[in-house]
Image (cartoon, rainbow over all chains, first blue to last red; front, side, top):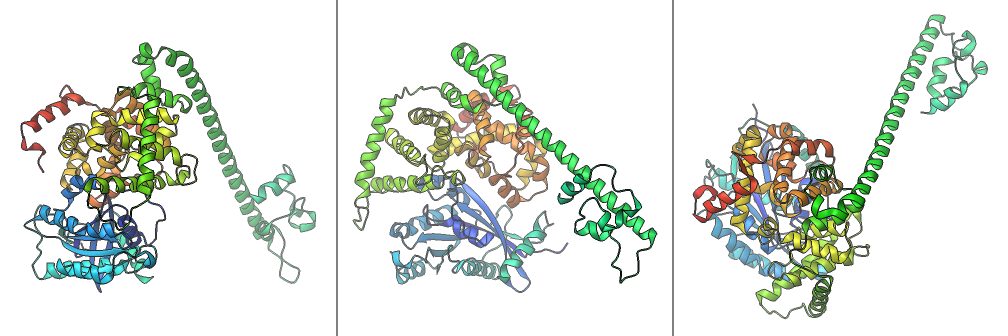
Length: 213
Length: 410
């Protein structure tokens, strides 16, 4: 059977509550901006195919976590099986930026000796007038931790595709170079050569359509 | 449906005469397609052969007959629906009467009787729901309306003091920052609580009530504080009870062992609950259990949301209320039984899915869930495992855990 995706990457999305994690993911997977969304209790799941090169598709399995501090003891259990992550802060909320360090430490301490490929995301960049964190400052912090930095807006659909695709490309490069390997009992990266299951074909057409617009 | 009025007006037994096909002689005005079929061709074109005309007439009659049949069927369906609805309303009415006149006045003696338990299972009539919930949840904490008012006043005081500064004054005091963010979180979550109902949002009739109850609770139990998911529980209570009574039920409900374990995010105790759940899962649905295991789908993935919000976020509201009804009767055990009922209901769909589709399905259940069917599936779940009840299984696992058994380590 022909595999419709080369690899499956499990990504985790973290950051303070209300920075817009669910909105960003829904913009990416559903192509729309949800005006109102439920608060995430525990974890929510999304998936989408991404074409990183013509004919090379990666299936992203996205874990959307609850941001409230109280839930951290639950969500930290989900780091181990993630290969990559988007760490979000809200550019109009300085505190969410100050907590970036804590989030990283928390993640690192739970996946050692392995690591998660993180992308730092400054979200809600459409709200330029209320900005509390400068781009330079965020870039500097990202650089210090060896992360890329992207500014996104789910509302105006700015850089959303770019953020997910760049992260996927980075992980793909690490998989190709052998720095990240598929391991039994680890869910972070899975090879696509498995029998396909329901809905797969539907997903292909859906995401293809999205790529056109 | 246009043909119906027109054709209907024509009266019975009209479309048989051979001259019918001439427009002027029709005793009804043919509509677009009817006209094409029944009318002769214009004079400048060769006439329709009689055979063809006959065939067209016949086809047309068949069409009409079929459409009529469909109409009749629809009408029957509508009638049945109406009857069902009336029957339902009647049964709710009589049930409400029974609850009001017989059961509620004799609550302490009747609440455990077989008859009341059966009636309870069928769903409490909305008009007495709040009262029954209040009685069943009880008030172990002895909260009075005065205490609620005191807590509320304290909460309001706090809102007023934190509303003022909140700028660059970088006091890195963990405690205050946590409290402040929890206040902000309450505000934000209220707007995200049942948004489709449009009653809890700013300007809506219950916005302030929800805000008050959640705020008062953070003052009543600062050690627990506000945790996401609470706004849904409070909202469901507000829909069925007056404010102070809703608060009393809220605080007592959250004080139950299972809810305390979850809202304080006592991770190891939560894992014990999940482990107990898995015991009954394997016993009741062995095939699905194996499928979940194979896909590494652990119960935390779907149970956290279900338990935290007592299904009010995941099930349609009326169905969630029915789950609450029996939850009030059978306590925590019923929450896990409901989970197994849901898994049983969707067993066939789930067994053909992979991890991500199962996870997505379970965290976003279908919009339409057949209530009676779900309750049949819940009823089919046996909450005994090797002669042990839920509470016994849970207790045994808790003891194991205290002894540091590796079973719960992941």
